Amino acid sequence: MKRRVRERLLPAIGAVALLLSVSACSSGAAECEEAFAAAATSVPGVVSAKWDCSEQFGGGWQRADVVIDATSKEEAVAVMDEVLRAIAAAPDLEDTWSTPQEYWNEDRSVGVGPNELGFNGPPNVGEVREHYGITPG
Image 1 (cartoon, rainbow, N blue to C red):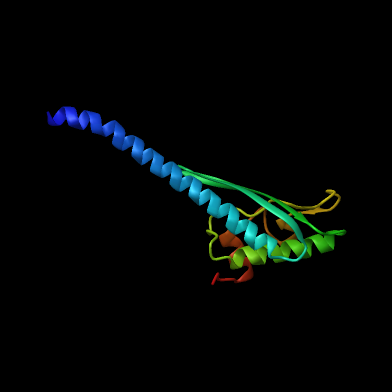
Image 2: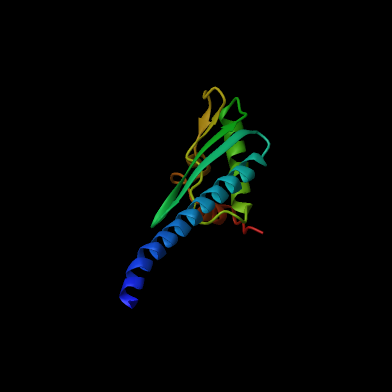
């Protein structure tokens, strides 16, 4: 009798565990997207900012599309610098999450990347915090 009950309950328990983990992952992804967008759009010179975050088993990824109001490379670098500082100060962002690879103006005539600020490729949030000496509060 116990064996039959256990055989019937185990698949159900497994299904519930899977649903809970998927729900937690999608919730984390939504929080990631909202927190990044809120930090970026708080910066003057950001026209729009959209993130796509995935929190999968064993890891995840973050992709961003940040559109800035800039007519020169210097203006674009200044806006990117402020976006990265806002990201560093955002307490809801995890150190391991990735920052944008590039920032473009609306007609894509001006684009810059974190290497313009001394980073060796797109940094994660923790590297940005360390670079600027910012502890989120």
